[in-house]
Image (tube, rainbow, N blue to C red):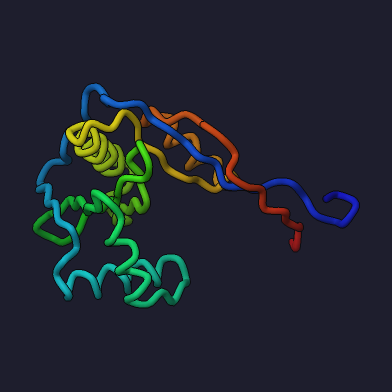
Length: 168
């Protein structure tokens, strides 16, 4: 790769956390937990718009329907009187739970929201007799890798490599 001017600095890392998870993080003060399957058309529209905006994508409703068709599909929200605090979208993939989307509203970051949501996801999967939960993380985001490790995840395998170049 280096002979072609590319750098081997990025990839997709599979991280895994065994279940049961242990002691859960508390629900942040003023928040309420809501769980659903995103089966309300208005909620579906808002979720897809938020996802596309955050990731600069243009996924359509068919893509969303494919997500919802995954086994044990669920969304867990933390809501405060001022609006959404955070959400996690998950499903079963093989013999493990799969953490697909984890979002924390900007003003609620670094307040235990993500940890609480991940712990709730772990409880959900453990109640379904699964023994681990997985998440895929970009290697080029070391702070996210470290944050997931603080939540009990360990790097399991490198799924793929993304050759890159320094354009700066």
